[in-house]
Length: 101
View 1 (cartoon, rainbow, N blue to C red):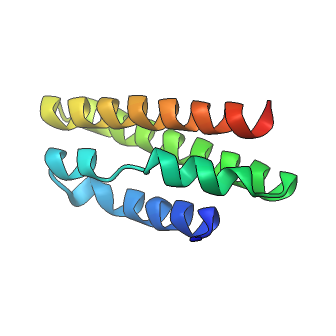
View 2: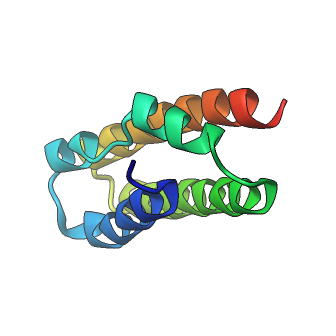
């Protein structure tokens, strides 16, 4: 089983590269919910909290990127980022609910 930390770190690294990618590329860089939920279920409480913080940082990064795209009036990029934020928030919420509550 791939560790969730490696999976999240890989995704966090790709977030840093997203500003140079086109809008379709952003929507293709998403977590896989089934892998994520399965890996989160086997984590210790400390590791789980660390992963939740990574997700929160990823969302903050996406929000910053949205603000930049909005200032540049790049509607396609804004739309792609918003769709990614919605998807990431939904997946995060499901994983957090299953693992924490």
